[in-house]
Image (cartoon, rainbow, N blue to C red; front, side):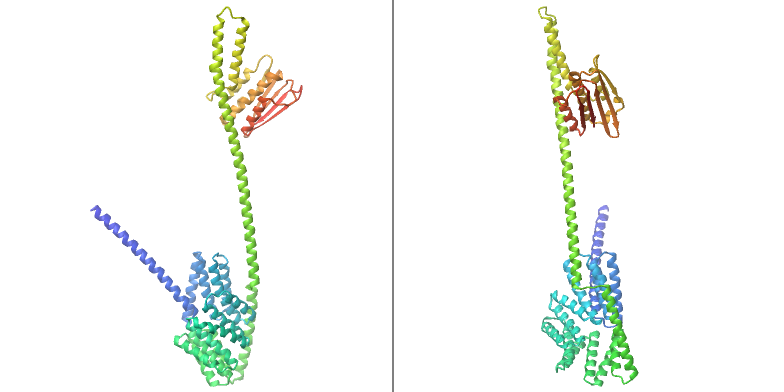
Length: 554
């Protein structure tokens, strides 16, 4: 029964995992399909519902992308929002959205990603500046896009946009040259609507130049657009045909296409399209008031666009020179920052190296010092256990011999005491014995009727706080000072003071001996080396007839 339950549980877990994976993949596919659908709809909305539905979709996507720190999705959503705003005639809002997207792009390091979107945004900005009647800015942006175009479709589209700028400024020869370049490319382009776009604009330009094939090109473009049932581009064809027939004086045909354009603008529910269609119909009206109103309205609309354009340019200038200057400054800042980092790393490495050098050197000194102490202890033990004991046994033996002279016995006894003293000088300290008592015993051995040694503060020091090698070094240093006093100083009074200040131990030695010029013998030199090996300091101070002074700090 237990085996059956386990098998069923395992089977249930596998099935649940499979369902979760399948659902996740389906959900991801649905999200991808939605994005593809709304992306295409945003570029070619057919009615008001398309516009508002698509706008809400990308606005929601943009907010989610910001929450998830997904720069790619945020910039992508902003592109389609800016495109929709442009199509609705909200040029300033569209430009503001583009500026927001460009700021996000500046935060990413993906060059290919930046390049692709910059091209799209520059193209859209060029279209905005066309509407704002800024010829120089539009051409500057379009030429930048053209220089970075990597496909036939992109190049053909940019040539078309350049032609529109020239057409709007009645420079039809330049416009025709650009469109002929685009037409030469469209044979390699699969997008039928793009072909229709280029044919339609070429027809408009040629009709303005009174070329015979202008009308046939516009009608061919309309035929393609109607076959694809693309409402927004059909409106453009109707508008261009209405303008063409009005220009050649055929008001019947002009009004026919103008009415078709107006009907489409109502179905699309585009305020911009409606205004343009009504403007065409007003041009054909005989009502003086309507004509006067149209002229005034056009004048106000043009002034408003120019004012908006000036404000927008003050808001954000996308000139190539400014961009290069900003990029140059950024590169300089980056190089300066890298230099600071490299310099800081170099300084840190140098400081760490110096620090390690001193640590290793100090450790080496301590190890060498410990070896010296171990060697001294070993020699001391040999002197005591072998030489001194042998001398003592010999003394015991000869004392019972009548023929041995007294002076020989005295010399043997002197030899024994000297051997024992040398052994004591280098004997290892017993850790089980309190260190302050070791010091007290050492000092007592040097105190006699000729030298009075005064000691202060020795019992107030917590000697257990110091490592063994420090205690041994202090013992040896004091021992050497007292030996030096006994051999050379001829002092009658010696003062030894121990004082602990925070983490530092201070030991001062003073005697009233004969002093000398400061020339260190082997004993005092070894003492100095030992103190320095444990990172301490020792200072000797002596002059003839001025006694001998020493200060040790550890």
